[in-house]
Image (tube, rainbow, N blue to C red; front, side):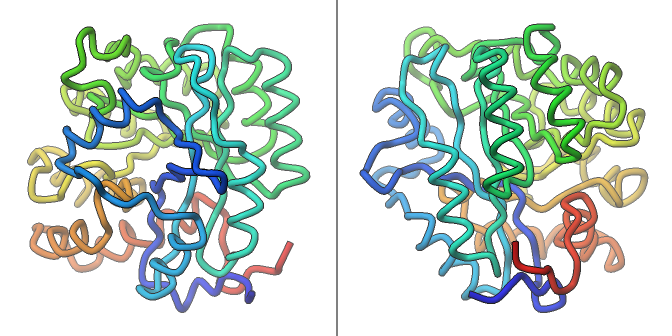
Length: 297
């Protein structure tokens, strides 16, 4: 398979999920997965393999960041192996970019895993979902892991705002929304000033807080996944057009939201012509350290 050619890509989707393993194991428990389907009105949506995801994006001339979520400590549900995600993405280097997810509760074992995943498996970043993983992002127990990621020079992507996972389940399936307040990630940006951070999603009900953090901290970005652009709050659109034009990233949340739907609605949004390519590709390419023709690993 050929290496990634940035010039041939129309967009880079920085937020897609590996929801099912080769063996058929799901990334979420049946209860939480069912709640997510209900929330996104995605009943019975087919969970694509990573190979199918690659074909989907290749057909559209786009690349995608792919990850799962490791929340074994809080949920007791076994994760999809990071190695499997990375190896599957390595089979499609022209369109897929592997991220990993390491449960911060794993302590020093998690730090060793993060270093190994970057060194041996070509992982390009890490995904955190504090509400599912059951921790506050500014909890010092997670700091050794952040320190390693900062040293490795790859981004950390944090879920922020409300989540469809656990929505409607009694007690929210044990998921606490407060852990996804972007102001908790502001502490991380202060304590790890060289760490590249992505605040995932329009951060309802903390949109203004997310914008403030991204404006104030030079290495904090925002991805636009999980919402159709037609529902974006006006202040998010305004900042994306101005102060944050170099720090806002296209993300879909595939497969629950497809890039086809997202891009169709984004085309109707009042975004300046010169800003569109930044959001769709250029900002992500810079953040991820991509070049026009990457050398195969």
